[in-house]
Image 1 (cartoon, rainbow, N blue to C red):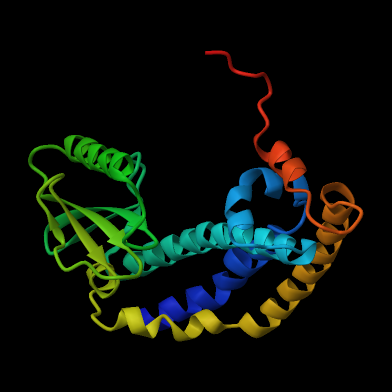
Image 2: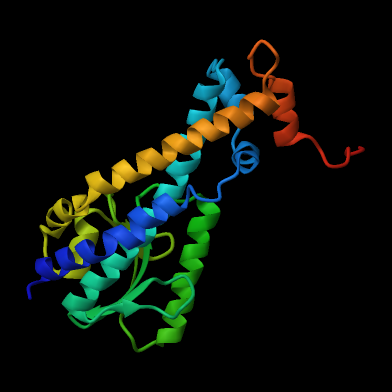
Length: 247
């Protein structure tokens, strides 16, 4: 079996349980109050949303978008480890903060995998650098270790990061590193659509039911008699102090 055939087989086998099923499951058991407490009510007021159905739909979409990023990011990490395992006997690392380890051309690569290039703030990047330093110490002074922040999409024009002593390889460069194939980043896009239409139909149906139920609940609890949104009540749910702070 070729590398691309192995990658395609992994996607066909795992895209449903690791992404579509988890995406659908993220709707099950969701509670309106939980969503309302996690999202910024001031933002939605500033967007001049005036109807309960519109507000609930945007709240749900914002919540699910962040969920999807997390779920799909985990799927891509699994795909990357699978591809590297096929190409270079790579494996998921047991070192804290390191997702993938492999040896290519005598170099031992320690990889922290992220979905895209704009993934963290300065504190999070510092934590990654500290994880790289720890991984180097564990590997020992004799090992030729290269630390890599691998991003599944995007690009970085300056991959050599002097501050932190690591490579930031994004998109094509990342997939090329772990597979040895410069075109893999394009070849893996097509199989991702496997069963997408059928799965999306099921998701849209579940989303529609949840939207209807949440709209009814929101209207009952956070709308006035004229059906206008009671923003004071909504903000109180989201931000009212449990006990008032005293200076």
